Image 1 (cartoon, rainbow, N blue to C red):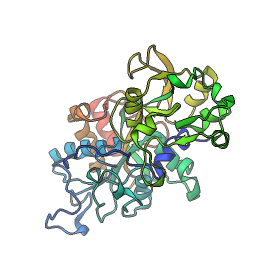
Image 2: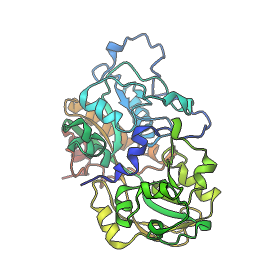
Image 3: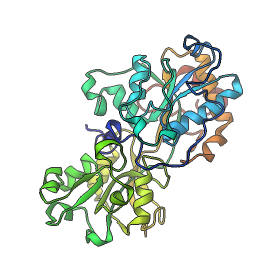
Image 4: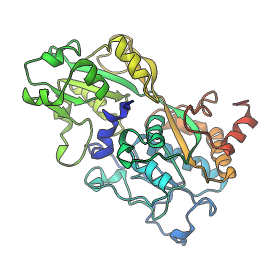
Amino acid sequence: MRSIAKGITCIAVLSWALGSNPARSQNVSPAATPPHASSGQGAQNYGIAAKRPVFAGACKACPWGILAKVTAEALKHYGYETTICWVCWSNFGPREMADKTKPVMPPGAELDIPEYIEPPPDAVPDISATSESNLIDAWNGTGAYKADHKQRRNYRVVAVVRTATYMLAAASKKSGIANLRQIKDRTQPTWIVGGNDIIFDYYGIKVEDLKAKGGGIMPPMGAGPSRVSREKRASGDVFIGTGLLANTPEQRSWYEASQLNDLIFLDMEEPLLVKLATEPGYERAILPLAIFRGVDRDIPTVMRPNHVIYVRDDAPDGFAYAVAKALDEHRRLFQVQLEPWYYDSQTVAMSKVIPMHPGAMKYYRERGFVK
C-alpha cells in the first residue's frame, strides 16, 4: 500500500526540505551544543556513554527540529549535553540512525534560510524524531525508502507525541472550483500547490493532463530550480496536502495562501476518507471551524497526529528511561513551541508497529501509564 507521504511528504524528502522564505533568526537552544563550537572534547567523545548524545533532528523551525530542541532541553536536567543535527530531516535521519552513518549536509540546504541550519556534527546520531508514518516506511522499506531494497528493523520508540496535522483540500474562489471532481475535466490551466497520489488517483487527476492544459504542480515549499515565491505559490488554483496553522517550512504554504488568497475549503468524499484513514499513521478527524481563514464549517478529514522520539535497539535501558522521564517531567516544554505539541500519558507509550524501548516502558509502568 502506498504511503500518503509519497504524494506530499516525499516532495520535501527530495528538494523542498527547507521552505522558500527567509525568516527571523532563531538562537540555538542552550541545551544544544553547535557542532562547530569548541567544548574541549573531540568527536570521539560524542555518544550516550559520554552523556553527549547526538540528536538527528531537522531545521530549527521544522517540526522534528522542535522535538530535538525539546528533548535536549529536558535532558540537560539529567546531566546530558545534547548536540543537535539541524539537517537530519526527512528520510536522512531514519537512514542515518538505522545504518549508523554520520550526517551529511543535504544538497542545496545552504541555499535557503541559512539561519535555520548548521553544519552537521561529525558523529553518528543516537536519538531522533520523525513522524510515525515516516518511520513505519523506513521500518518496512516502503515509500521513500523503497529504492533502498531493505527493511530497517532496529528502531525502538521512546515516546509518542502528538500534534494536529490535517489533510486539507482547498481552491481559490476565483478558480470557480467547488469540488475536486471538477479538476479532471477543467479546460482552463489549473495550478495545484502540493498534491497527494491517493487523492489524485481517486479524482482522476494526472500531472501530464494538467501540463497539457497549461497548468501543473507547484511545490508547497522548496529550494533550487523548482522554488517559487510565496506570492506565486499563494496564487495557485488548488491546494492539497497536510497542514496546520504554523509558520514551519512544511506548513507555511497554508498559512500564506489562506491570507493572500480567498480560499474555499473542499470536502473529500467518504470512500476517499476511508482509504486515507487506512494509511499507516493516519486517522479520522474533523477540521474545526475557523482554523484557517476560509474554513466556514467543520470538515470531515484525516490527520497525522503521531510523531515519535526514538533510538536504536542498542541504546542502553538507562538512557531510554532517562529520556522518557525527562520528557514527562518537563512536558510543559511541548506547549511553548512554534508548532503546538501534546504530551499525552494515555498515548505516549502506544506505538502500533514499531516496538517501544524496554527502558522507556519500565518508566511508563512505574508511572502507571501502561500496565
